[in-house]
Image 1 (cartoon, rainbow, N blue to C red):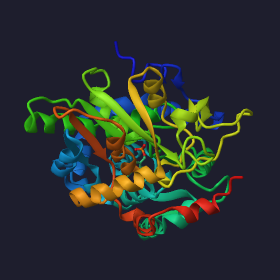
Image 2 (tube, rainbow, N blue to C red; image 1 turned 30 degrees about the vertical axis):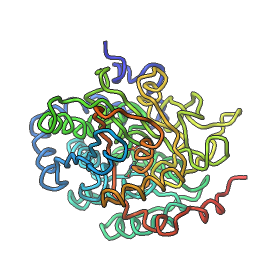
Image 3 (cartoon, rainbow, N blue to C red; image 1 turned 30 degrees about the horizontal axis):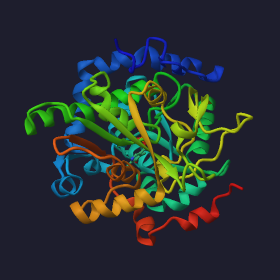
Image 4 (cartoon, rainbow, N blue to C red; image 1 turned 180 degrees about the horizontal axis):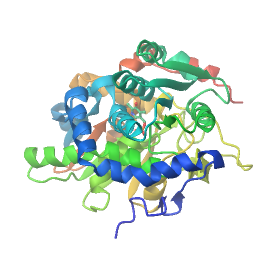
Length: 403
Ligand SMILES: *Cc1c(COP(=O)(O)O)cnc(C)c1O
C-alpha cells in the first residue's frame, strides 16, 4: 500500500488539497487535469531529458566523500546537485515546468524566490525559452541575496521587491499568488518547491525525482545494491528532499533523516522549524503544518538560510513526519555554519547554507561503519559567501523586525 505519495484527491494523509480563491480554480484545475498526461508524453520526456543532460549537466555525480566518511565512520556519498547549471537542484523543476507551461499555451511566467536560487533558475529558463518573466522576492532577501538579484535582472526578468510581513519568502509567495489571480489566462506560476495547492507538490516532486532515480542507478554501479541505508536532505518547502527520496519512500530498508532550520534554537522566537513547531493550518493553498500563533496568525520564521526561511512545509513531508516515515532534526544556524566549514575543509566543497543543515546531521546521529549514507548536496555556497565570510548572521538577526 502506498501511503506516502499523493492520493487521487490531492492529499497526503490529512495534508495537501487545493485551498484556492475562486478566480484561480480553472487554472489549478486545468494543471491538475493535464500534468500527468504531459509528463508521460514521449516528446515531453525527450525534450526534458535532452535539456537536463546538455543544459543542466545531468546526471549530477554521486561522489564518495572519503575524508568525511573516515571522520564519521560510515560510507558517505554526496549527490552533487551543487554542480548543476545555476548552482542548485531548483533548475530541474524550473525546466520541467516551463516546458509544461509552453504546452499549455502560456506566454508569461511568474515565480517567488527566497535565496534567489529559484528566481535565477526561472529567469534562466525564461531566457532560454524567450518567455516574459516576473520574480517576486521579499525586500529583506533582495538585500541579503544581491548577487542573485543582479543575475535575475541580467537574464532579462523583472524583480519585484515585496515589503509586507518580514519581507521574505512567505510574503513573496503571497504576492506571486496575487499576480496570478490578476492574470489567470496567459500566466503560469512556477512554484519553486513541493508546496502550494495540488497538483504542485506532486508535480514538483516528480520533476525533482530525477535526483533519486539517478542515485539508484549510480549506487547500483558503485555499490552492490541500489539503495542506501540512510538518505539525508534539508527541508525548506521540501523539494530536494522529495526528489531524493521519491523512489524510496515505500522501501523501508531506507531510513530517511531530514534537517529543518531551527534558526537560533527551538526555544527562541527565531526559528523556521515548521515540523517541530508547526500546527495544522492552511498556507498558500495547502493544508499542512505551519508556524502560527493561537489566533492562526502566521509566525514570522527565521533562519540564517534564506532558502529555509519559510513558515510552512510541503504536505508530503508533514505526512511522512507524522506517520514516522521520516526523522526530522531541527538544526541551528550555528550547527549549519560549522558543518559548512567542515565540508569545505575536509572535501574542498563549499556548500549552500541550506545543504549545510543536512550536513550537520552527522554530528547528531551515530552511524555504523557498514552504513551507506547518501546526502543530497542541494546547492553550492557562492550565494552565501558574505555570511560565511562574516562567520555569523548577527547583523540580520538584529534587524529582524519581530518583537
Ligand atoms: C531552495 C533551496 C533549498 C530549499 O528548498 P527545498 O524545496 O526544501 O529543496 C535547499 N537547498 C538549496 C540549495 C536551495 O536553493
